[in-house]
Each structure stands twice: as structure tokens, then as C-alpha cells.
Image: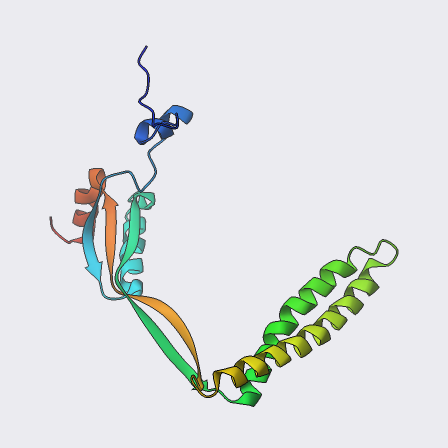
Amino acid sequence: MTEQPSSPTGATSGPAANSAAVPGARAPAEQRPRRAIASFFSYAEAERAVDRLADLDFPVERVAIVGRDLQMVEQVTGKMTLLRAIWRGALSGAIPGVLIGWIFGLFNWINPLISAVLLALYGLIFGAIVGAIIGGIVYAVQRGERDFASVTMMQPQHYDLVVDEEVADEAARLLGMGV
């Protein structure tokens, strides 16, 4: 009988650790050798390629779409004013307020529906007031340093279609990419 090598903590590592738990199980995607067979400038193009492979009965569970060359994009959504800061603060306070009030109202054993609605309403009002106050204070403390609202997102420059090494040639052939 052979023993699996173990780490200093006693846990096995690598593919042997995963296959020991479930006989015949494949190693996770991170541990299988993979190869990029195509690169696309939009996610929609990569998605269409995977869809084409699925239509041709290729095992698409062995495919991944990997975004490469990430860049941070901050899209400005408008000018920030005191009124807008108060409004956004009220909205961001009202939503958790209503949810917390509703959940606490459900704990009433005698009449949970009425108390849940009533506490949700109180939570909405209280959360909106507290959120508006905090939103106004944060805007005032910034003193015009950041007078705009924005949304930040990460965007890949291109998308690689990555396939398990064992079936990469077949996937490239089906997509007409040539190897």
C-alpha cells in the first residue's frame, strides 16, 4: 500500500487529494492543464463561440471564458449636490431599514403579518431619516473635493476561450481556428 504525500499540516494536496475523496472524480478546473484556443474583443463574441461548441455537442463544461488585461473604469453619473447626497443617503438607509423592520416584525407570535408591515414601515422611515442625515454630513465634510457621483467597474480588454488541454485541438477544429 502506498501513502499519499502530505503537507506539514497533514492534509494532502494536488490532484491526489481530490480524487481520493471521490473515485473517478476529475480534478478542479484550476488544476487541469488548459490552453487558450481563441481570443475575442467582446464577451458576446466569446459567448457565441461557446454556444457554437455546445450546438456541435462539444463538452462545454471543459471550457472557460477568461477576461484578460483588466482596466478600472469609473463612469461619472452626474454632479453631486447636497440635495442629491441627502436623497442617495435616504435611499441607502431606507432599504436596510425596511428589511430589518420586516424581519423583526415576523418575530411577533400573535400577529406577525401586521407587526411585520408596521415595523417595516417604521424601519423605512427611520432608515431614510438616518441615511439622509449621514449622506448630508458626508457631503458637507468633503467640502467640494468630489462633487460628482460615479460607478466603478472592472473591464477586460479581451476574452480568451480556454479549453482543457486534452480536448483543445477538437475545440479549435470545431471553431475553425486551426491549431
